[in-house]
Amino acid sequence: MVSLQTEIQREWKTAPVDETLVEQIASATGCPRGIAYFLAARGITDEGSIRSFFSPSLDDLIDPMRMLGMGAAVERIQRAVYDSEPILIYGDYDVDGTTATVLLKTAIERSAPKETPAIVRYHIPHRIREGYGMRTGVLADATAEGIRLVISVDTGIRAFAAATEARALGLDLIVTDHHLPDGAQGVPDAYAVINPAQDSCPYPFKSLCGAAVAFKLAHAILRASCTNDMERERLERTLVPSFLKLVAIATIADSVPLEGENRVIASLGLRELRNPIQTGLRALMEVSQIPLDRPPTATEVGFRIAPRINAAGRMDVASDVVELFLTRDSNRARDLAAKLNRLNDERKATEANALEAIEERLLALRDADGHFPALCFVMDDPEWHRGVLGILASRIVDRTGQPALVLTHEDGQAHGSGRSIAGYHLLNALTAVHDEDSALFTRFGGHAHAVGFSLPSQNVLLLRERMEQHSAVHLLSPDLLAPPLECDAEVSLEDLNPLFYDWLDRCGPFGIGNPEPILFTRSVTLVSEARIIKDRHVCLEVASGNHRFNALGWSRGSTLWTEVCHRMQLTSGSCLDLAYRLRTKSNPWFTGLELELVDLRPAVPQKRYPS
Image 1 (tube, rainbow, N blue to C red):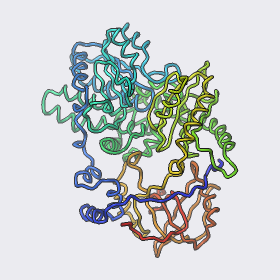
Image 2: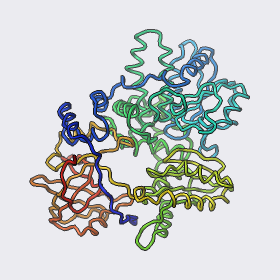
Image 3: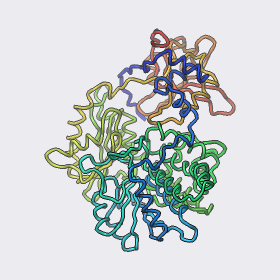
Image 4: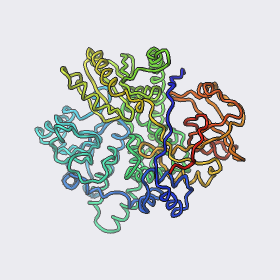
């Protein structure tokens, strides 16, 4: 792999906080001062928010009935259940959509009286043949089969044509979604629309994923079906935690901010994932090589479980995921989990082949100094698989620090996915280039950081030109292409001990909105020459007084640590400032703590704690 490292030196910043407040938090909680600084910098300062942050509980979940449209939706679903009306759940092919389908189907079936079991079917669209969103043809087929109630999950907020068609067919449509509504058209004309992002919705937390919105509906349905206090107690203390396992997986996989209620969901759900009973989930964790004797981490969910679930929709049919999570047959569960594992291997091989071509194109775009032009990359190839386009776009962003659109071609149409960086709103960019003199896209949608779209293949050159013009204007700021490194606290090496690590671990789960803390330490001494690992990675032994640590630099994305060390001319005795994440060694023979490098620079003497 060739490094695409730029020469731009990043500034290190910590959020200014009140030192008195830091001391108060440390005194009240007993946590180390560096942890107290981290809490203060993130605005977690009052007693209630600190308690919820360190010890989230079921009581921190928000009442689902506060969501606009919830009462009408629950009433209509109950009526369908008691009248034995068949119900269709219209899902989506990613982690969010498949888990949402499972959650809602399970809840509706559980809510039904034993003498009149609910009739719940589901439709998971095929990524290639149908694409994202609701299709009117599916609704027509459902009507012919006797369906009179359709519930969308993780989709539908812009399904205006489908809503109109549903009305004409005599279908009641309940939309549950989390994507942003169309600013001009509002929301579809449906029986009920449940989406915290819609105007006038009083629900106080707006950043739920699609599965979490479906869970809110599921929770409300089950609560309405309870007939006594014992049933209600069992729901709140047994069933709800059980449901949170899948909601946590979807929340982490969908990269919604892990703050507020999302963090509560992720924390409680991860805890419930320890030694799961459900056969499909257990089989999936086994093939993902996740130990069953402890809760998985958010990283393990994001990089082991989620890719295998997504692989079904990317490479084959996502309905296998729904079957996996619904089956009680252990043999069938193992077979489906093994299939998802194989599909994920195929996805990785397909991705690797495309990345080789992408690397060559990126190298050709660099100037003599190794820098890229300030633009959004637009790359296309008819050989690239539609199921991995979003991943490829993410890889370009990782390697370059710049936004990217990646497309493939089929029957005269180009299909693409895009990923962006903080500060460059990709959906707004697509809207801007689409709304010029001639429309570009057949369809497009998404949000600030991720988009999906299609357009005639003949328009790709025009798309590239317009995106280059748009991004050249909006990406000129150095703060976008080389943003300051936001550090969470300054500590000394003597502060780093198992107690500090335990407090740091309690600050998880980490992800977007609650990123893993980056610590920094000034003026450490390099004890010996940098040790090179597998020609790419480095291990630096650093010390301050009698405290020594290994600092590991793993070369990935745009950073090649061997080049960094060579450029800085590091030798034994060099005095450095380190920015890093604290790690515990995973090797049972070598226990203790170590540092994972994020950045380093020649030592800059300054006051330790800024006022």
